[in-house]
Length: 386
Ligand code: FEO
Image (cartoon, rainbow, N blue to C red):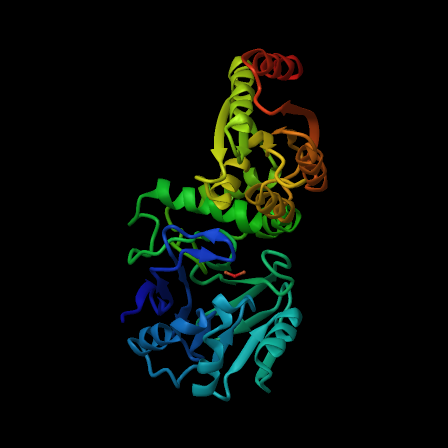
């Protein structure tokens, strides 16, 4: 396996995970990569590693450039095992290497691997010279874990951003000018909506910290490296972290005998009437991680379920749990559902939506099968408040 030159003496030596389709519940329909980078200088430096089972790819790609026992410094920007999983093997090959991380990173690496490695703790503003290049660090806690940091090399204007600005996208192409940019951006949006969304405040801080940093290349830890669209992806992160929404309404539901589904379409008619762009998602056919991508720019989130054995349908309950964790904010919500006798599902949905930080503006219930008149009234009642 080959390394890929990023700049003179800077190489991509990561791993491509072509077949992964489930990343903690996130549908990675295009697979992903775990990007690691090798810098050849007086002190040979490795930035991040890969998922444990793909460590062989990392070692082979390093060996394409240099003996894998010649590494002096390992930078661990993030402890999560998709990036640190290869570190034990690297440290076994290079027992005297210096392992650089934040204070939380060192705690995390100790908790994961329990090895007496040669740690060096860095913080925002720390600088380490490796010869012709300087490693500068900015801590980025909660983008994605408390331990996260990014590493910047001013001589090359490369930002090694770890999870930030990444995409789950497996490809042999490494750069954004080698791959359809619409697909990269779509996957970056999905990645933000499913991983970064709860951490909008830390993201804003990172974007502030990066103001004035001259960035030519953003070398992410997942997917494609940005070099032609650096400004664009930073602008998108500004937009996404601002919580900006459009006139989009997303209607999510499960249905037993199509009654709740009929209500979903009645809601959709109301949104169309008021100039919104509704999106209808039956949870039996739409993956919750794709729904989150739509939610990123939706002003309204509508969730519906019939009552099944005094509860919501399991798919709706699962989706609401996922939504609560990602907690989109400043959006309006509608709960709806059909029922036969108890009708508990609607109150349960309302409660979950409220706990997710959403403002429930209206609820709709229909007993057994909503008539055409019932559906017309749902549409009219929603139109009245939009
Ligand atoms: Fe790609 Fe938070 O690890």
